[in-house]
Figure 1 (cartoon, rainbow, N blue to C red):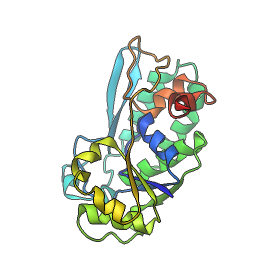
Figure 2: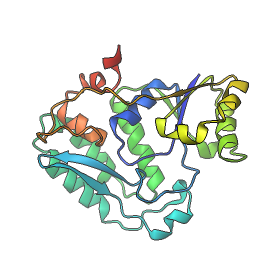
Figure 3: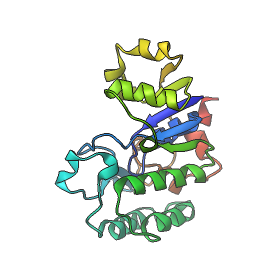
Length: 232
């Protein structure tokens, strides 16, 4: 059983969905501390003038909370983000693929929780990309021990035989590799290099932008070729 465990992000880039696609089970890990100026509440999209940030306004006290506890108090952001994304991509060749998702995310419901919005939008995009991975939430499991112990215990509960980690986690997992082996879990790190370029609104290619950019600019049938199937 291949498992990935990652905090929910705002409209993540294609690498996030690459990891989801690789896993049998993807676990949202939102029972950890919210981090300011991170991917939890912001991401980039790409206009003809280049990439720029979209940021959900978050109360300053959120840094004292878990991601799952962060509330969305400013209700204006949904309309503003919809209009910004719409204006940015309305002339993109495959905008018709993106617009129904935008309406679901920003117009169908008023969101009160950052985690709930992120998880909903990620699962919806994964379904749109025909990813079959099962999604679970860490809040539904017994999270005991320190940072490493919680991760190992969660993997055991999920019956993992292989764990896919993002490359940045290597900084804190180094030295604890034996704990994975002792529990018959293979530890691997995702390689984000080599993604092929595609046509964007900008004349210069921007790799690290939201998956929305790919959906607006590439036919849905071809999208896997720019995320995971190009490796085959």
